[in-house]
Every structure is written in C-alpha cells, then in structure tokens.
Amino acid sequence: MRRIIGICMMLLIGWSLFAISLDESIALAKAGNRELLQAKEDIFKADATYKDVRGNLLPQLSLQGAYTLSTTHLPDSAIPPAFDFTSGLDATASDNDEYLAGALNGLMSSFIPAKTQREGSLAMQLKFQQVLFLGGKLINGIKAVDRYRSIQNLIYQVKERELIVSTTELFYQCLLAEKLAQVQQDALDTASRHLQRVENLNTEGLISEFDLMRARLEVAKLRPQVISSRNNYNLALEAFRRQIGTDDDSIVPTGEFGVPADSDISETEALENALNSRLELRLASINTEVNQIKYNAERGNYLPNVALSADYSLYTVADEFAIERDDFGTQYSIGIGFQIPLFTGLSNTSKRAVAYHSYRQAQLQERDYRDLIELEVKQNHQSLISARENLAVQNENIRMAERNLELAQYRFDNQVGIQLEVFDAQVTRSAIQLEYFNAIYQLVMANLKLKKSMGFEL
Image 1: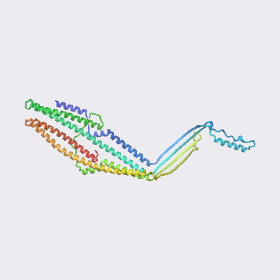
Image 2: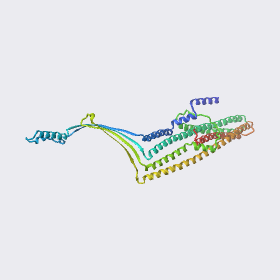
Image 3: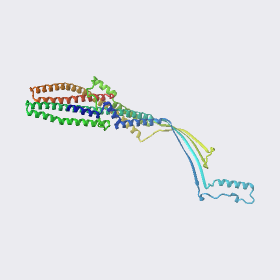
Image 4: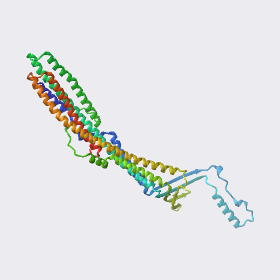
C-alpha cells in the first residue's frame, strides 16, 4: 500500500513539472543571455561603422541656402537734408544750367536713404567634394573597420559556444545530482528493507538486540545523506534555471544520462582540427592584420592628400520683398586641392614606430594563443582517455559490488554471514554507484570540452 501511494505521489509530481531537453535549454539560454545579446548589438554597430567609413569614398554633396526678408527704420538724424542745386543759380542761368542743376539734385537724392528700407534676398549653394588620394589612409581605414566587423562576428560565436558549454555542463550537473540523489534514496530503501528483515528475525529470537540496533543506526545514518543529496539537486536546478533565464520552478532538465559515442580521433588529428577551426586563432590572426593595416596607414602620413571640390551658387538681392526674375545672379567654381606634410616635429615618425611595435606585439600574441590552444587540446585529449579508462574500471567495480551485496545478503539470510558484511556491501555498492555516475559525467564533459577545444560546432 505504501509503495502504491509513493508511485501515485511521483506521478502527481511529474504532471506538475515541465521537462526540458538539452536543445531547448540551449535555445532558451541563447534567447535570454544578456552578454550574448550585447555581443549581437556589437555586430550591428560594426556593420553601421563599416558603412559609415566606406561612404567617404563616394562623392559628398551638400545643399545650403537662405531666404531673408529685412525691414530697417532709420532715425531722423541718419537722414541728411535734401540737396537743391537750383537755389544757387542766378537770374542769368540758361536752360542748360537749370537742366544740369536738376540732374544733380536727382543724383544726390539717390544717395539719401529712405526712412524705411525693405530688402529681400535669396542665396543657394550646391557643393561637391570628392576625395582623390589620402595616402592610403582611407582605404586602410575601410579595411580596418571591415576586419573589426569580422572580429565582432567571431566574438559573438565564441561567446555563443561558451554559453553552450556552460549550459550543457549545468544541464548534466542536474542529471548527475538527480542520479546521486536516487542512489542515496535506493541505499536508504535497501537499508530499510534489511531493517525489516532484522526486525522480523529479532521477533523470532534469531538475532540479538545489538544487530537490531546496528540496522536501525544504518538507516538513521543514511537519512541525512538523502536529505543532503536532495538539497544538492535543488541547488543544481536553481543554477540551471538561472542559466536559461527562467524563474519557473516547474522546469526540470530531462534526458539520457548515458555514455557518449566513442571518438577515435588521435591527438595529432585533434591538434590539426584545432589549429584550422579555433575561432580564437582566427581572432588573433585578424587582430594581427588590423595592426598591420594601422602600420601601413601611419606610413602613408608622408604622402599628399588630394581632393576635388566644386560649388555652384545662386543669389539675389532686391530692394523690395518681391524678388523678380532679373534679380538672380550665379557663381560657380571648381578646383583640386592638396596638402603635403613637410615637417611635423617627428610626430609622424613616432606614430609609425608605435604602430610597428603594436603589429609585432600582435604577432607574438598570435603565437602565444597557438601554443596555449595546443596545450589545451592535449590536456583535453588526455582527460578524455582517462575518463574512458575510469568508466571502464567503474563498470567492472559496480558489477562486482552488486554481486558482493547479493552474496552478503544471501549469507546473512542463511545465518552463515554476519550483519556487518551486509552493511559493508551496501556502503560499497552505494559508493561505487556514486563513482560510476561521476565517471559518466566526467566522460560527457571531457568529450564536450575536447570538441570545444578542437573548434567544432556544438
């Protein structure tokens, strides 16, 4: 009856939980990981920067203009009196003298400003600029931002693979913690069943009270271990849920906690794959190339800069607000300008030296990365071999532990052996089961880390 109730409780708990596979866990982690999302935004920014710099190769056109209406009121002190040359003529003045005096009056009056002045003006200019030669700085700049765009894409892929590895590790840690908790629970169930036999035998007077107390103490000793293993499982679940970005307590990882397929790849093949496929090496290579581009750009500072410019202007000025067709005037110009650095206080020489040594430093870093990756691959390959050998040993150990427990129980039931043999066999089997599942976990992680160090898609 108790077993039926336990099965029903497990079914109810199973219905309330939402099982999630490894692929689903990785997909959720990718969708919610902020660091990965930031890396994706860096890709968009790098694309926009590349287009911005590349646009400097194209002609630059700009249109500017203004339309102005102005009204000016002059004070009386700013307006001189009107001129009258006719008042200075005598009675003998001829008609020609009168005509000349009147003409002078009109001419001088035109210089006297009106008290209220209105003016309308329109000006527009279309300007064209085209870079012809910048000593290679613009081309090298475009190459540099293009490599920067590649770097951001590779950084995203590196972070994505690291996220896959960490999510996979937490996923299998949950499966391992679940298996270990089950082993502890099975050990407690076995000890409880053994306690029931001992109680029955004690009732019949076949064993002593000391053996009965020993069996009860064994059960009491296992109960805290079961509680601890359950707590460890719950902690593993919390870490896993945080990794995939969810607070849903009903989500639990589920999957096969089995041995991965054997890989016959040799250490030499693993090293060759790593040197050809590792993203970190490609990043280091691109970084070296970028520093070389910067060095080439600094070397071009001694070359002239040449640019073509042209503009066309349309303007007008009218003495009234209304602008007539004949008020417009035009102006246009075209020219080629150049600039040649003659002496910069050795500044360009210093910049070129800094760029050269940065380039040399990037080359050394690339070689250092290559050596570190080779060492990482060798270590992971050896770890995989050791994990396989350890699992083979644990397979044999668990087979012997199961047989040892059967024999001890059989000897005790037939009053040939003592109870201590049974306890020792139970403890040994539980310990070996724990080591067995740990060996599977170590093999899974060693296989995953070797694939990552070889640059494989995960």
